[in-house]
Length: 375
Image 1 (cartoon, rainbow, N blue to C red):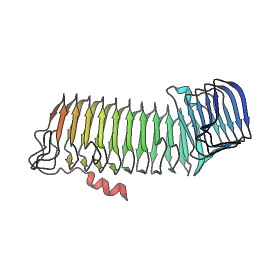
Image 2 (cartoon, rainbow, N blue to C red):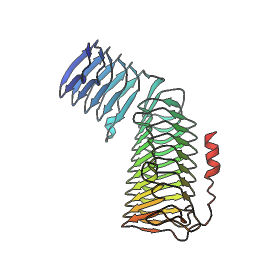
Image 3 (cartoon, rainbow, N blue to C red):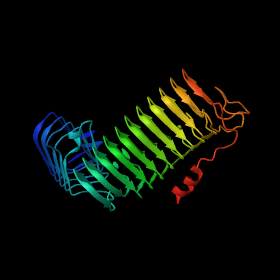
Image 4 (cartoon, rainbow, N blue to C red):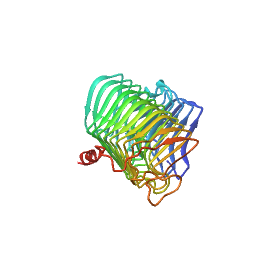
């Protein structure tokens, strides 16, 4: 019995170890296994288990209050455990996602783990769904308060529809790695940390969905050919974030009342925001739309108004920002608020073209989408 320690058990660079019938309580971490081989953990009650750069580690018949994290490890066996907030698997290579994971449950249901499967429909109240090396999946799920609700890696043609993601997800509600042809539609994300996180995902579509009270609504890095349309992002911190991406479009969306930035892109090639309502963003810092080191950026036919520090900001970028309504028939302000003009548009080492602008608000279709996704 180990209690009130920083980490109850730390195994580092070791092999052929057995841990059985152990209880750990009131520690910051339960069991951490790092750069080790052939470690067997059975019949333990502990706060958490952390595997990092391990091989052939086995966890069976344990009660884990928080989570198991498997980071850049291979050939792990996770069998017959209760895991309060479930699993999280991370790594930069394909081999880090393939494990033996069977008969585990989390706080709100089962943990489903699919490897190399195809043509599957999943419609049940599972807490977590892992899709590794799979294709042609259709998922409908309601999940809350786990590490990640849906994790997909090296998979294609995955559809998530009519789903609900609620409560604080420790990593993300939907986590995609090196996957393609991903569709998320008619779903609700509320009170999440990060709602959707994509790494190296291509050809994705997020549509007809509602995001509220998040730290980040959608985050994508090193991804390409994505569209977000007819969605609402409201009352969060960062609405949409794109890093080192290509060919991303946001269309017919409502992006409002975010504390920091409504939509931002950094190091992007091909970024379009079209017929969206972007307003009331940036109470703590930031504003409506931010672009850094972007080329082929088009922000057209939007309503951009009442954002705190700026409507559009750009650095080291070329931005076509014509035909937008900026909150005034006199167009946008420059560098500082002007009493008769609309939102500030300015940049550093950038070219931002705002003329001609719209003198009246633009009909964006997003007004009707807002009512539909909230029903």
